[in-house]
Length: 161
Image 1 (cartoon, one colour):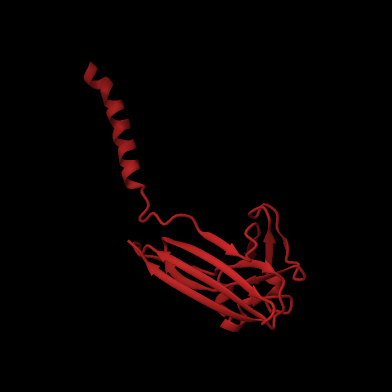
Image 2: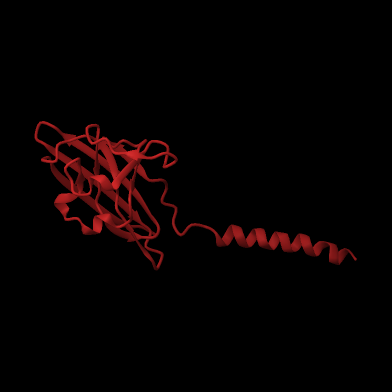
């Protein structure tokens, strides 16, 4: 009789062991990093995915006069409430890229008003241990800048084990 009573306990232990081993991440890359002049408390919500696929490199700064300006909303509470972008206060930067399904992003923006230049740096740690790639548009909100500013993109993808 004791043998049958231990069966549920053994089964529970086997399930817990399997889940703790089988659910580990492919790589431990840490959290995404946001720094510089990015408004880290504001999220961007495009009306649909892959909007950046139709843009050229000189269109990755979204201001009031951008053809897609009305296709974005922002949120200060991670999407619980959304509002139209006030382009007198904010601009949006994006930079699409395809990465592994396991990737960590370090995004930073520096604005040089004297020379009218913005540098958007994106460093990616890519685990490379999955079969599917993902398309990431790298939207960030910054303070409003003129659409005439030169945007420099500095990207680096590093594959780690």
